[in-house]
Image 1 (cartoon, rainbow, N blue to C red):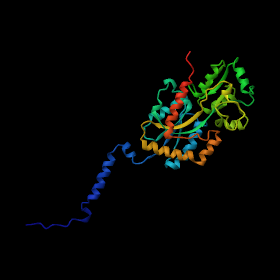
Image 2: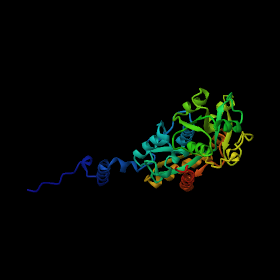
Image 3: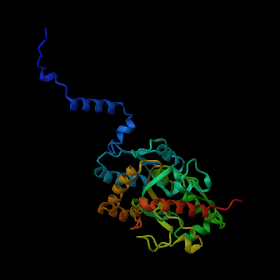
Image 4: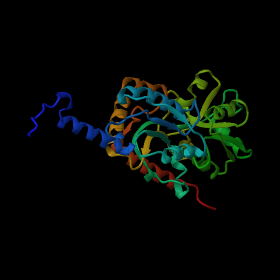
Length: 328
């Protein structure tokens, strides 16, 4: 006897589209986290590594840029201060992170200088620049009531007496600039202070005689008459201090301006680098950032976009290596 066909309940009717969605969801859940993260960038907060202490020029730049980048990228950008080894400890943090664009780092001239002559534990090719943000000449500063009233007086004293100079670290641009003076018979001894606050306080507290720094970074000390400049390592007079002599006019022709750039780890997805570079360029072109450059007494044309930043870093490293002191 035949059994009549029974109607199938609608809630149990096979649904091809529903099965397809379930299958797709199951397949997605089996993908590794890295593959799923490619759907959107950035997909989480971006860590901003500052290889220097709080309060210094690199830290101030990161906090200003980070604040302006957050609305552009739609994620938070926490600042991580990781000091040591002329910026190399913080850079190691970047190089240990995944090359996924969720870690960025400040790279400055002093850290680049530490790579000169192949001395670094990493290479310039290990990072990818997304922009050079600020460039400033370095200068020599003393406590406001220091006995040296002019650069000439400082030079005369340093021929017979050893004077201590507070610098960012060994192997830095600071040390190169001081070494060129010592090569001509002066007696300056570099004393590294990784923490900016300690470096600034070194001449105020008598732990160093002279400070090598950028005018914008110590502007509050200058305007409050706690410090004063004696000379600048620059090709043109420093904005705001055009009456202060240039070191090159006294025979010290090596001029290497400080720069601060932002880099990611090499191997980062070019699309992510492009996203970062585009957002960073918007920040650099903003009225807020242009005013920041004015406040920092920096070059108005400081910004170098990603397309040209790599060539700039390479040329700076070549120039630093060309000016390393000759081995005795």
